[in-house]
Length: 423
Image 1 (tube, rainbow, N blue to C red):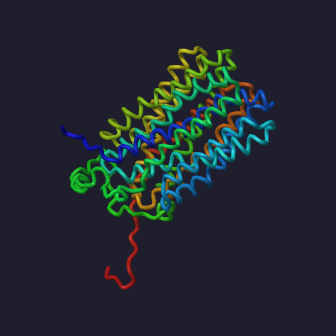
Image 2 (cartoon, rainbow, N blue to C red):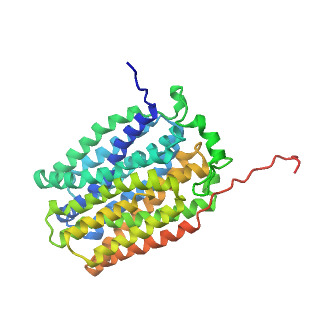
Image 3 (cartoon, helix red, strand yellow):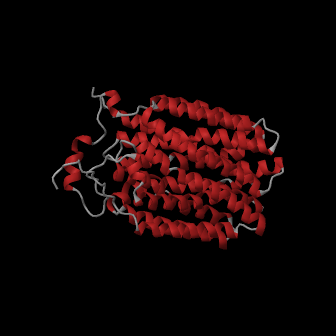
């Protein structure tokens, strides 16, 4: 009988998918909890959204710390320890009685622990795969939309049947169980006497397949974090990522509230936000596995930003729930290119040696987006009494981000000359 030997990196892909689903749970469940927390604690839209913004503020330094920890420590300890902190924050929120306490539990602890879940998995996968790296990252990052597909109706059902506080207890406990998969993780293939997937034939393919539609391999890949952060290309991508997530977080945190305001029943209103997850799963399969392999990454990103922003226009014109489902599918489909392709470009441009730290700094753009997007959207709603202007802001951010695709260039590392070297 023949035994099929599975490369260990694929087990890490499976574990990473489940771990990133927890990151998605923390993201998507907030939008469902928000109207109930606002009602129970007597908060305005801006005040309730500010909890998410505070959590994002905590994430900014936490991302940088997590990135350095990934480069230095066992990922099993990093992921499990951080994840448990986030889970405890969720559970503790169920015991709180005052609005300011939510900033400590749902803001600080969830933000601190959540920082390790996503970037650790992306950095580790980048080390384990040379061939099919974008595909592997695309698979694990589907954990966020897949979680959204499950989390929105699950959270709405738990709140409807068991109450807000018990829903927090249940989801926090579920997180701890899923975190056990983190013990599959390993920092490098060399830890198990393996080579990265595709390393054997990578040199020949990189030499002979430097076609114009792919980002070519950097001849000197080992950039330090300081060198990468000093490169203008890094900040172009950083700005695009920031605008992309301002758009995304405005939609994700306010969409459910938007539907409730229109008189749509709670369980029915959970469907369209979940459709964002469905669209994103399909999009990551199509865009990351196919289009990104045959087209210039920058063209894919440009197309997706323009289409994503245009999809939001549906919310400004129509008020029918079937249109909201259509919006969710389209928005999720085109948003899906942003998440796997930017980390893939970081690995291509700057190498893998310091990728954890580099990506940790890069991920702070998500934190700033979390600080800006939800609270500004909530504040604009409080001033105007409509979601027209917050959604219009999201469209503008998306279109500006699209322009950045014209400025992304493959960086060239400056080689320091040794003193006395002949020129």
